[in-house]
Length: 110
Length: 110
DNA sequence: CTGACGATTCGATTATCATCGAACCATGGA
DNA sequence: TCCATGGTTCGATGATAATCGAATCGTCAG
Image (cartoon, rainbow over the protein chains, first blue to last red):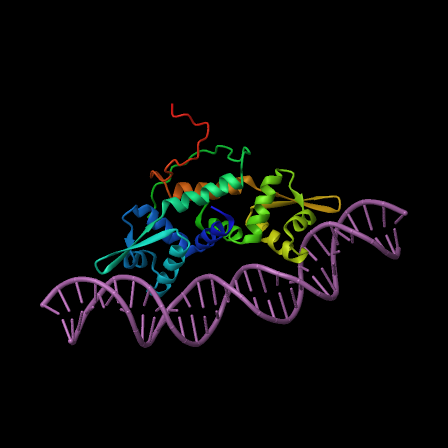
């Protein structure tokens, strides 16, 4: 993953609604959720949501899959790992960057 | 690290110049680099660089330290880990998110 | 085909961001 | 003190982002 692509992914995630959408999709797993459900849960207007989903898809963070009349969106875990990889390798390459914090388990707060 | 803060950090990193600055600072280690050096290496005008450094500092990703006439900037590794933590915990919490790619560290499969 | 509904696209509006010259502030040396 | 130099702040400008109503497209049921 090079710089430009990383910037795109970070930009896609650097917005409250989109970050929320992405997290929701990750929690939803590979099946994903259809656009309507996402909008309903996050209280986002259809047009606005579509705009954000397009951004996420364009960054390669989510993918769309049509199923009957619904369009399901699911998170792209590879892209996600790519970002973390870039941040931890290219940014912290070799250094004792991670101070091995306590790994707190977070209960899924829906 | 909660949502708002994460969005701020991501937004700070979601810009080519700032991401380059941040990476440079991480590579420079705890000592950091003075503003002039950063600008010289990245070919960024003083005013522009100052603007970006302020954004990074505001997001808590870098810190400034005055040393004589120079101002040294250094990366905040904790913040960095916070982002990765948020992305990997809250977003991939529990799931088999990392497909364990070619990232072979000394983690023996033992 | 027609109607209904899920979702996207278009268009306009408003807000925020990135850039850089010029002016300014701060530190250290003479 | 005065000056040179490292950095920042101010102000203006052009570019990009976010939002949402209205119109449109696509799919399915009848």
